[in-house]
Image (cartoon, rainbow over all chains, first blue to last red; front, side, top):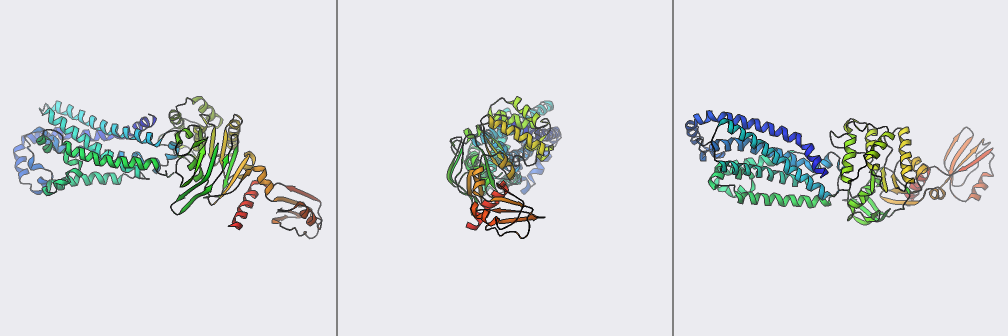
Length: 262
Length: 292
């Protein structure tokens, strides 16, 4: 478990910074809710007239009288993008940096199999992404408690499980890609997150492209879809994880046999 | 301890090593010599399982380099020519991480080695000079007392005093039973310490033998002092150098022929010595070049 401990130690600081930053956004969003609730009639009225923009963010299906609708939209946006970016950046560099920063020779000249290194790094990635989500969820819960807001406990749990799974799917995908790379470049990871995000906006605008829902994990973190389905969108989640998992296994297989560039 | 059989590594069309067959016996201090890009580091990386061979096979400590990589690495200490550590890591962290992965408690030995090398293990590795980073690598490679030491340019970056301290430690380990595989550009180091050596050129083995046998099979250095008159013609003489009336040259061939040629000249003193490692290296390299 030496590599796991090492990765947790190296990644913990960054995870904490991201968690605090995203929690600040959560607190700001929660603090603004009383104002939004006071003007919910007007917001609903405006949303109906937003046209394409409202459609893009799936706003016309949202009822701003509902706390969870507001919370899901705000928290889903910054946690979806922010958490997704953390997962992508962390996943993208975790394996590739050994070669990119020339530490592979030190690590792999120790008696440890590449498989064990990959598994320990992968566990560390899953733990870091989960800790980030847990941290932000706990801060949100505390904020909601202070606000004295009532909310659907089930919808809250489904939503946060979906967000966590979305972050994990991005992490799995980027970890798989990282196995193929020799340089710890985070740009492709960030590109993937943005591509997923905008693909979801595109699906919202053009319902004919709903088949693309399986390509973007942002689809299953939409609060209106979760509440309508009365639970996480397991089919989308399953297909998303199956495709990311396939890339992960391919990456594992490749890394076990590849020539390390020193 | 190390045996390669027609070991080959190609990087696409580029050559790494070609048909390399060498044998390092238990207790050897084995020198591995070659110019830059000759394939020394490629061979070492193959032996450590960092890269996979294109063809051929190799055994280290009697174990297969592909199937039993982890077991091999447990018995090997490796000092790379250049090494990078994780950001923020101190020397002591690098040594401890290696101890934890190896599951051996050898902190006392690590401290002892650091003391002998005058290394402050509490400093961050990123703040250390190249030579001090090399010392950290030495501590990491030797702390668990491996049976086989693979050293790639181990003394580069070390000052002469540290080079001596390093060799004292290595020879001590050798006396305790360790086998040493040394890749080095410092030919005097090979000549001074190695029992056997191999010369590699463009990925191919040029020669492998006992160091003293390599010296025997190559040219002799002849020095004539106080040469008077014209220098006699010496058949097969090369690398001729004259300082005042002292003449020095390399010659290879029959001793009687040399004596006959020398008898035509006049000089006060004659010394015939074994060539140094550099001359042996150049001799075999030139011979191989002619053959190519």
